Structure formats: C-alpha cells, structure tokens
Length: 139
Ligand SMILES: [Zn+2]
Ligand SMILES: [Zn+2]
Image (tube, rainbow, N blue to C red; front, side, top):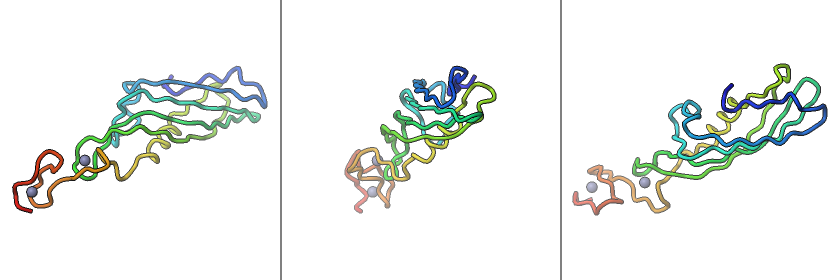
C-alpha cells in the first residue's frame, strides 16, 4: 500500500465516495523529487465516482512547503492548495492517486517564490544578502 491508496471495494455503481487523508511529510519524501520540501502534513480530499469498471476522482491537495527564494536563495515557506483529478480502473478494488497528486504538486510549484514580499535579494556586486545587512561594497 502506498500512502495514497484508497479502498474502493464498497463503491457502488453511480455512487460517489468522499475520501480524506492526512499524510505526514515523512510519508511523502519521494513525492517532490527535491523540487520542494513539504514542511507540514498534506491534506488530500477526493470525491470518487464509479462508472462501470472505471473510477474518476477529483478534489484538492493542500499543505505547506519550503521553496527557494528566487531573490536571496533563502528558504521561502508557503501554504498551498491545488486541485487534483484523474481516472483509474476499478479492477483491483483500490485507487492509487499517488501519481496524480505528485503531478498536481509539481504543477502548483510557483516559479517565483519569495521568502517575503519585500525581499531585497542578493547584492549583484558582492553577493551579500541585503536582507541581513546594508552592503558595504559600495553598490
Ligand atoms: Zn528572499
Ligand atoms: Zn554588495
């Protein structure tokens, strides 16, 4: 069982099942492949519907992650919430949403994370962190 596998054996035809799971960061280490570090639990909420031998699902994934600030390269923590959806065959009686959740997280990664709104960034001349002190290099 992966942490994002759900039992669908009780899901009747045309019924909708609401699923919820809270995952600790330790269970998700591989999910982000180094592009971000999850710093809090991941809340996954899915609504699953059955259509014959197929299940389709949609829902939300929310949590907190630590990215790299594009200006000063320091840690930038953010809360996030994104949507996830997918389809899966019902043959095994379980739904594994790992890949869909992973893709949703990758798509939700911001390309311009900042540690704070007014981050002053690094000095282009000496590389000093201008959030921490006024640069003495004269730039
Ligand atoms: Zn910064
Ligand atoms: Zn400087």
